Length: 254
Image 1: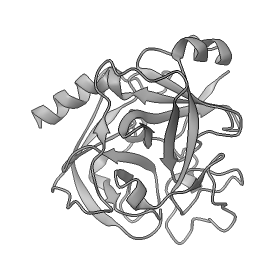
Image 2 (image 1 turned 30 degrees about the vertical axis):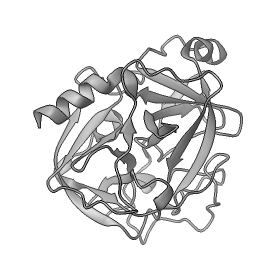
Image 3 (image 1 turned 45 degrees about the horizontal axis):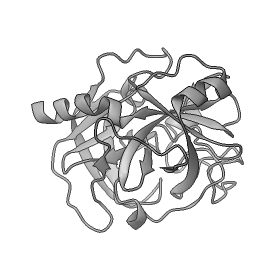
Image 4 (image 1 turned 135 degrees about the horizontal axis):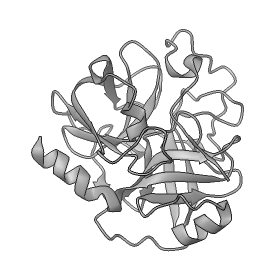
């Protein structure tokens, strides 16, 4: 099985304006998902071009830092990007913040599988916390996820109708240990820096990149990729517990 990066790579999906994007056919589901209010996930953020539509997700981890996928920032110029927080609508609401710096993992290689697919965003100004904007705890190094766990994934990505959603959507996906994921996907590229989850008709899809995968009250994954071509089974995430050292080092140095 092969996997896609989930950043919106088609021009009409990536950089359309709010007026141009067509959400008329969107359902209230991602792949097997349901509507999420921002108060239920106040750590959810949008990483997007100025005056343009949604590009990728991100997660608030402190009052000035967020994490997202490295492939989301790899081809973007962060001076032309902003972060929007406090909204469960992709095209309206929330507060915009300018970005001071983006640091992607030095071992991430563009287009080379999904290894080290994580980046840290520093904002120019500190976030104002409220019931709609709050940080999420990050998985600590060595965190063990129960083999029967369900992970909550969230985003504005493509739905079953091939439209992106203007409403924030979530789905609970079955965690799959890496040794089993390598077997069921017949994919040997899955490393210890990756996390696997999903089941038939439950998956992330285009536009969900960079968003959170949550276990309990902790951020355990950053959305990276999904199966080709229909986004209806297994998905890959950057494993936060394995990459926590990088995140902490960037925050401490800035």
